[in-house]
Image (cartoon, rainbow, N blue to C red; front, side, top):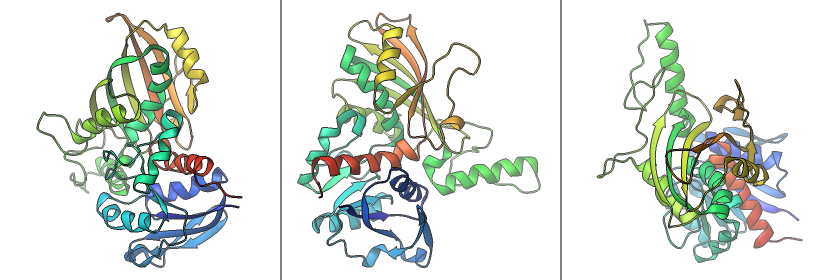
Length: 340
């Protein structure tokens, strides 16, 4: 027997990717519904070889459905996720709304799969921020071996993290640079994104950090270990899909780079590509469409006693969003909603 699955926000980048991944991973689906706002009624989306018609989120009855994958903003989630959860349908939410709620588990299956069982408090499970998700997959196996004290991370985040508007702005501005007759001023971003980098993602906070940076700090503590100190600088770069991160890690005890490389090679969800030669590493373009989190440039940090540096790349629409949500659904099925 399979599950009755709902994908909310099925016309967006992440929603469509959820449908692709459900089909690719052959998730046991008996019935599926695809929802979006009323303005998308009449639209169609693909699910494997099937074509599905969009239904209206505002009028949909979640009663009798098993799992709802939410890929809409916090405002819509705030209105509809509790309604779905109240009917007994387990919500897996990709927005930031519930991530910091102590009664809602924040889950990356390779890191803290057992936390899924906390869903019973509100019938909701939160998906972490895209930049956090790939980083904690890399941190957890190393933390288990040598206990991490502090992480310094700089991110290089693609425009798909801002949705279709961000991707369109990069495309249009890039074209306008080669055709100066058409000027495309910044709209989605505070400054030009084409041929530029912007050290600003989400809103600024009182301490000078941005909310994206704050999310990485708080979420890493909730998912991996509250004792880990994290400082982040999050940067938007002119890449369409794929987030990259330069991660500096300080451990409680010494961890040799060769041992770290071996640990990461054996860790779930990770692919190590680390050759000390031209091109012996993975870039965002190469990770698109892949399930793995790629680790390269593993090396000792000689400026501290117990330090390592590494380069981490992942498809943010997959591991950073849709894939992680589907993996949570898989764990939920294995541990709690067993059928057949």
